[in-house]
Length: 134
Image (cartoon, rainbow, N blue to C red; front, top):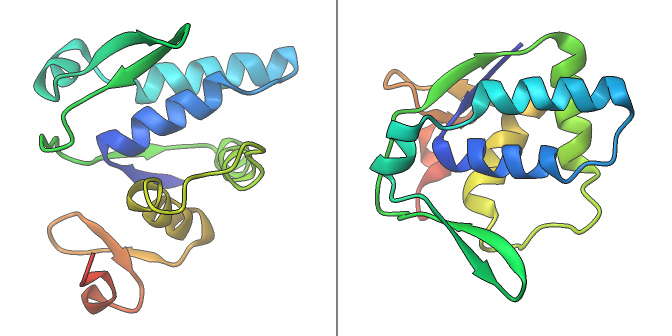
């Protein structure tokens, strides 16, 4: 099953996978998936990716004004289902405003309600007009 991910989705999925409590088999699956979607050093440089220490925790930052092309990733059915379950059941929850930009298109793909426009950008199945005003 295919997911088309922008770099923000890749970074956030990578972080969510890294925060999972899992069995050894799931752990290995998440490591493999993290390796697959991880940004390359060149991509990190292009978006100004850096890690900082804040309140005793490591946090990542990047320049949201920068852009990278979206990429397609193929997942096995069970991986696709597990990623969807992970996102839907994330216990700490999400920030309504800040997370919408990356999670809404991801959920639409996971739910099967997204189409890909001619330029490769994922849009709601109801058409391009549904994305206006954001």
